[in-house]
Length: 538
Image (cartoon, rainbow, N blue to C red; front, side, top):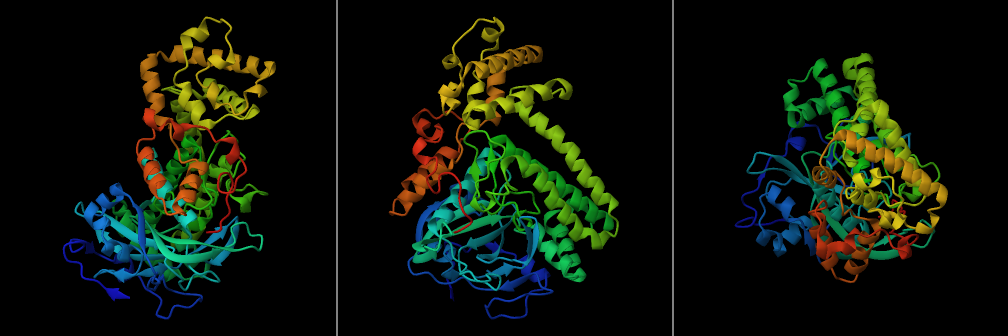
């Protein structure tokens, strides 16, 4: 690995690697699989790749890092963000953390295929960590190779940026580089591995610290290491909380509860399902992190999970996400407890999470329906009946709520009968023949209730339409769209990646020339691999 000359392309980047400077690292420098104790990271360099080729980069994320388009399209950029070369000031490392996976303590996990290159301070004095995912083995790789394939890398790259434009808290993605090297993966876990194109994503975030970073030290009784990490986190990510102390630790937990809830409410608003809400996949900043087998609801189904590993238990299904987030927060509370030695403030914060979730979920549903001021005792039955109706026949969640904005309450108030095809959201039904008389009568009753509720709201239709369209996206990164981009990219065509990024930049805006990306899942994609459920294989 060589350090490259930065002049004219990267010389303005200011590296301030506080994580490795202020926290204890692994004294062992050799890169082999092992248990790492009393250390927060292990220094490790990315593996070299044979032919790094830029498939795509995000102009918005590049701007965060003060990188120009010319820089991002240079061969030097390819070398740096494939891991083939290091800039002066970079200090690459993999983090040590543990985690609960599917509810069970898994012990040490760590960055098995992620390598942090370093932290930069941009012109706006913001701290951004640069991380390569798929850049080779680390001491935490266990039995894996630390590499990633194009299909999973593309999904993470495009989804990270799509979520940002949807207004969902998320880590970002700078670049997607194809390595030129094949990677063997058993996509279906059926004993038939195949070689696939390798790729590397550069992920960007203010911090990649997870719940599991605290859990591992607490579980091992490494209380000095735990305290140093918590104090560092407060100093770098939560300085407004004040100097580290017992009260500050409690306020830190309270703030993490708040930001985590905010993130999950956004997930529920846009119909996103993370798929692997293990505690090692929970950001201390309340940002969506680690895009593995994720998905968006097609037909509204709170029991749907995109993760084949979760098919039986459905622990991480759409409807469970709020309570799983709370369970994960309780594990974080357990990890922080030794610094406070009082369970009461943690229990109070978790109780407040439950109370706030109910309030925020009601407000979010109200916003999706164009209701400004939600009254729980009258609106809860209206909301519950709607969510029941959405499950009685396969109804596309995204299209239904988006098209509901065009609902004419005055016409409904007349009580005149009209056909289902006249409904603005009729296109949301996957199988309109399932709309039998019983369903239709029940739907009409709900629509009458909804029309009356809107009348009581007293909001002009034009304002309601605008408000609903601000929270109900027209475009989301449906799995079948991502799979089409993967199919093309594996043949060397990255144009659909570029097109999807462009469409997803304005997910709430009608784009007449992009209507094909706002369609419900086609029938051919219902059971095709990559278009519905996915495995954790990458």
